[in-house]
Image (tube, rainbow, N blue to C red):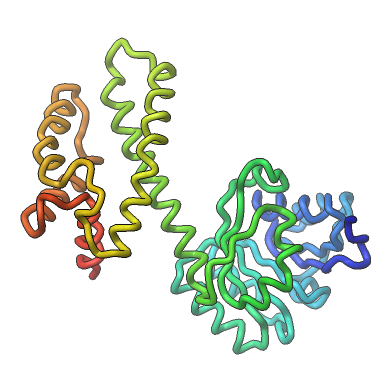
Length: 296
């Protein structure tokens, strides 16, 4: 049986961009008491007719409830908007995109002001919010007790995934997954570029590319297992030496098709370096160690 409105946690939401507005509408649709504030008042007023209470200032919005959700442009915006508000005894959930270091610093900042803190990394776009079947979710990190206390409320707009007491872990998971996404997009861009000038319909090619990427995705589990065990030769299908030997074909094909190799060349160079420093019987996993060891 659904909770009635009187029993539901009152939520204060600061920031009504596309994502903030989607979050607000999800809580309103579930009949949660919601106070909103936005720097541009028109965005907040648009939600008043849907049941939101509109605060005239951020301080007034924070005062209205205990659970304060922040979804702003960047970390600097969080500091600016919350400056002068009384966070003592508040539960602050920060869904603003930032770095792990910013999240950890913001957690310390919140504690100094008497607030409990959770950081969040949203793995969804606004149209996925409020649509459970869309598969979106938010990574949360920080106080486990705080997460458990508000799990039901936080799970109304989209799924939740708690990833640890370290406040920086939500941002780290967020950026790691998105980095992999951009790497995939880079490979797909190169693939489409190779066929771009040929009599090949990209809409016919796309299903082949999609199926191939899906078929290759399970290899990530092998990579994770090798990283955990430290044995990069376990379960190898195509070893590093064989794959390095094949890279000239990819580069030559790109040249013949008039396509820049700039999306592939850096990875191929790392493969060659790992081969020179490691074992040709390894998988590609050793490239990861080169990236970590090359940190400034």
